[in-house]
Length: 201
Length: 439
Image (tube, rainbow over all chains, first blue to last red):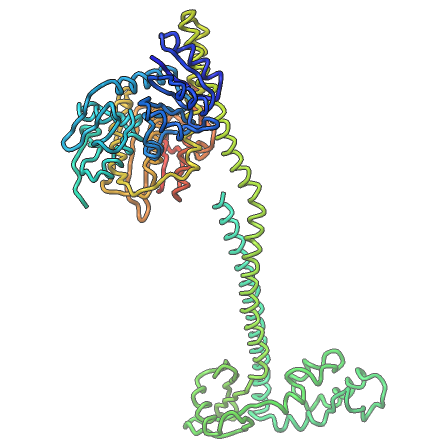
């Protein structure tokens, strides 16, 4: 797998390029935003990009568009805590990961995001659907990897941990509200998190 | 910290108000009491003269004021001696009360309630009332009321003894010649300064209160600025520390894994891994503390449902440790609070009770007057006492030794609760630890 790591901290880049290199991934390391653009313009292709939110020269937000135009999914590194408002703020990011994290967490996300890009699955629940490779909710609103995982787990009636999925639950609920759907994710005492119909107020 | 400043201003201001009120009330009470005493002295004098000063005035008029008229009997040397001798001359004819003002060699002859000027300027009337209720004029020297009005006024006062009537008139009721005498004197001129002092006291007091209030506010700001600054710096430091640690920890994690994969796991890599995980956890908890400064969006949420949900989610943890968990939650309580903040508070309370409980833990959520009370109890093995210090940063109770923690969880709870204007306390009574949160 061809991974692009765009991070100012050279120790970070080298640590992860060595680690991921062991799993026969090709890791390309860049240290600022202009390097990302020049790599893309040189016609280099990547399966996935890991971009630091506060990348110098051209920040992650501005890089999202050229990356997604080439259909390269992006995982954004952030030093802030993950919140629902963060998840809904820049819609082109496919996933976020907060520092500090274990290498396995990042590896897991890389796999999970790139797998979704390759799949042709479409998750459906009543009048709601998520097109997995497009990361789109009902064909219009972009969703993150975590929200897709959440939606899939809810359809399969799996237990969802509120502690880990909290921001994703709030973000998905906000997006459902924006689409005027009357389905929300709620906690039911006997069942845990479920998708339920709400009464229109 | 802002609250401490407010408290300081309020308490200082209250004490100033109290002291001012005490001082000004005392001054005015003394002032009015003295005015009443003086007036009573006059009415007593009139009473002794059987209701009229006419005869008395003649005597007084014969005594010239010592500074004005030259002494008739003694020549022109020092006046105290002269005055004294004059006073002694008139003494037998005068009544007893005059004697009081002959102190200091008669220097005060022309001052005070018995001075001749006072007598001539005195406005009063005296009416006598006999057993059959016939009202008869004894003396009338007043211009504000007519004689008829005075007569009925006297009649209306006959059941009293002494006191104020119609604001500035002092009256005395006494018996003489088997008749009831009512003397009323006008004291408006004497009372006016008293009222002036009262008005000045009220206005001056109000002005002083306003001035001191602004002074205390300025002082409070000055006094508390270093403290507020220190608190802000501490928070800033923690958040900086947290950010500075994040990247290195992530890198160490990755490097450790690389080492393990290259050379296999050994005790050293395991140790590094363990320590890094510990530090990662600490940094994450610091993150919870500092996130709080960016005021998160608050919404009205049903905390009864949320509390129940969180407790149900964590039931298994209590079962694992053989702690019997009792939950008593009043349904339908909603609160304007950040959803994530409340979840964090609950998480910390749960992890705290898991640490301290021996066999029992309980969570209660109920409305209490206009507040919402969230109470967590457990049977901690701790001596009785107040444990409010557990809400301070990096404070861990001795019992918590051996159990993992950073001393930050409950500090976060405190910050959250304080930010929503809540109160919290922790205490151990009879072996039961109670953490009470008022929201």
